[in-house]
Length: 480
Image (cartoon, rainbow, N blue to C red; front, side):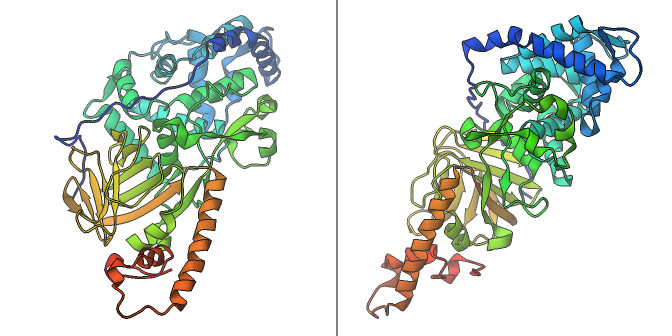
């Protein structure tokens, strides 16, 4: 019930305007990194297990053996791409050796991919193994490897569970539809509309490996944030969802902290992706993305409007909200402004409404998109998602007892919100909550006059935000 495997007939998907900062001086870095490519080739020569009877060349096995664990297949595909420059065909015999000159030339071709469209073309050829069309098996390999390498380049420990497979299959469902193969132009259209930075993490990782240094900040996109207070399997959010969302969302949701993190400090980690090529990455200093912090989780805090309000209010930075309901549906509401209760909708140009499963797609982009009404008697109470003048996509009534999906009533399973802002934002929210709790104590000790109209008393909203149950019809769970 409420399951949507295709676009609603009255819902058109807008094409988001994703911009990536590029500087004209960036193209000069290609020649500057030639010495780094030559040094890398020499280091690869030293890793050869057998005596190298061909000085100035390395074997395919030597190249591929540097890649371990989840990266083993990628090493095979990257070697084929560098040797053939993407012009090989499935079944063709790929040369078993590569010279230093060929390696440097192929490396320069990769390093000059500053435009994301050019990156998409390069990695389409890599994962299709030179064919003109990409099949579902190749696309799934691309998704798995892009996920692993994006986490690695963001210095986030690798993790994957069965929920991630559901997300990845939802991507395939959206990208391919009824087709078994797609051309580059079809993949590019889908990426532009839904996830333009899907392979950006792959390119960030390859750039770092080839140069021994991090990608310039103006060229780096799709950084994956750490999740504070996160335990895999105990939230609706998974790392697979985080990765897909960072490939879809504007930069403001994944901005970088003003500090560097030394990957050498990660040497003790159990993450195989960070130990691979460790000797090449000692000089790299990869930027870390701003963490996301869990503000509200209905399993922990209670599935109620009262508890939602208590944990959400006073957080003044962008947020990610997940809504899970029957039909395997999970929606993401990325808000670029603080949540506010009232009669008008809120959200600016970076706001997104994204369906994550069973089909991954950007449903609407740009605000105002969210209306949150608790007290006004003239409009429907609850939370409503969808742009004005268009069919409402999703809503949650005041009682938090169901969800309406395009007007169809569905069982509500889970709601959670993640804060995407600065550390200071959470600290300011906590200070505000402390002040509110003190005010609540004052109100509790104050004897209300019998002739006061409680429905119109301004203290009612303050008590509600402080966690005091002021009207039982607002909540199915008043637990603190």
